[in-house]
Image (tube, rainbow, N blue to C red; front, side, top):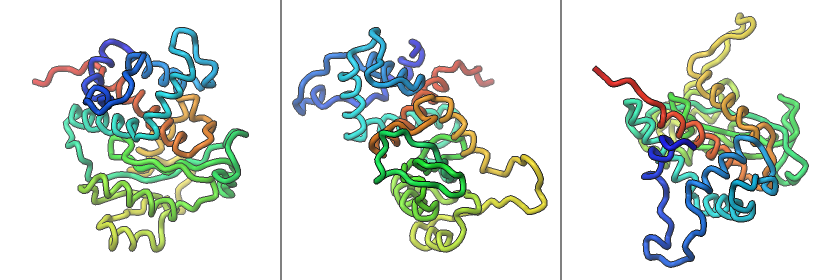
Amino acid sequence: MTDAEWAAIRPLLPVPGWMRGRGGRPEAYCHRTMLDAVRYLVDNGIKWRAMPADFPPWDRVYAFFRRWRDHVLVTEFHDRLRDRLRETLGRDAEPTAGVIDSQSVKADAVVGSDSRGFDGGKLINGRKRHVVVDTLGLVLGVMVTAADTGDRAAAQVLLEQVTAAHHRLALVWADGGYTGSLVEYCLAALALVLAIVKRSDDMRGFVVLPKRWIVERLFAHLMRTRRLVRDFERRTTSAEAMVYWSMILLMTRRLARPRPARG
């Protein structure tokens, strides 16, 4: 990352336990080096053992990735970056509206049969990423399941998690795959309005649908990071962490981008 990116994100990094007096072994490598190594892996789609010699040994980088994944530090860091970016763009840190959708991707051979399935609609054997984004296209929540998991069943669990973390969220747009009892459930149990944006029958060819294009733009960004073109992770928690790391790449670049002074 550039010096401008590092200056923007350094105050937002989680503080290790040994620096807070909670014990533990001090880390042998600086956070900037470790962040660069994980970002390089996610952006270029390499194997862990193919980590270039310019970075720390691959097992140390993987241990850093695993610790941040298991202790939810990557989610904490991602959420701090998202809140800072929203405030930089003149928005409140807590969103009030969002968009939900899913993306099916092929799974590598290392993915076990217990976490993979066949999506009959997309004809994809692999996994499915369910995401909720705000109106800026920033991730509010992500859940990875087998590709044969229904959108409504996954959305019920994901929306419960997102509304518990974001109490001001009141409106979520979705496509026609989320119709049915889910709309009534969100209103009654979560106090959340689930607005369905449907494509009319007389539409022909490509048409930009209101609000739904926001989450589609997010999926396009995820596919630009090569580690996410196919699901290579043995565990769904690792696959979710890779989505957060991809968004960290995007948000650090936006935070470091020079902005014109307001008049």
